[in-house]
Image 1 (cartoon, rainbow, N blue to C red):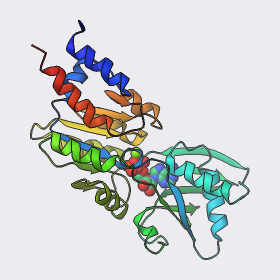
Image 2 (cartoon, rainbow, N blue to C red; image 1 turned 30 degrees about the vertical axis):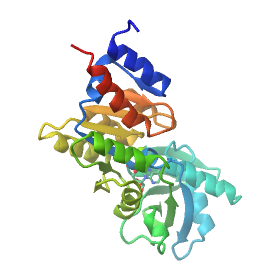
Image 3 (spheres, protein in one colour; image 1 turned 90 degrees about the horizontal axis):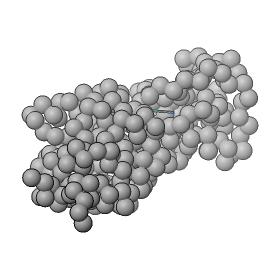
Length: 284
Ligand code: ADP
Ligand code: MG
């Protein structure tokens, strides 16, 4: 072909379901020293399911789930969609009177449901915790006017191709592979064990993810981060190369990223690194 090598590589990546935004990005991907992954929607499918609802005294499981679903009605977060789906599946009548919805990235949602201030958010210690093995999953607390109503446990399946993708990027880089997540340490460890990730950072707020990326860059390492959510946008912007998982990813993540994996397949990442390295051999 008479195409310049980096342009040919971008076209090739496109045929394999990866949108690379510039020749500079195509070139830089191959120089990655360290890869970090987000968990939810990146190493996992991002389609969690409710496994257990544990009510506090004075509430039923159905009340907790229906109230949470009402507050999550306008949520674009995978956990919010899973809670709404579980309520619908159980045929629960969604409380009609919902106002003042607010998404709290990396934390949860808040809304007025029937005039009560409802928050559905990252479980605090002291929330009713379901017995193992559900405790290996994501735990969210449901609060009514600041008082806990109960806890909802969810799990999200690890992508089948994730272990091979993690092994391939480790072989292609010089550093351990990192996992950055807002979820609890037990849920993060489960995904790290299943995928072979070396180093886990859990319980992070969106800004914490960016701070960790910056810390990993301190020794000059070029850090590539893969993420999908609004909560990943600051870290995607900070990373040397930010890559969005596009299929179900948020618009903000797509805008912020340097490249987008449009095909729902993590194997695209090691392929992209290899493609960049091959193309660079022809660049003078
Ligand atoms: P991750 O870093 O794994 O992609 P997020 O940063 O999106 O996860 O969320 C971190 C944590 O905040 C979740 O594990 C959950 O406990 C809580 N959370 C976030 N969004 C919601 C939501 N819409 N409803 C309930 N809990 C949420
Ligand atoms: Mg995510």
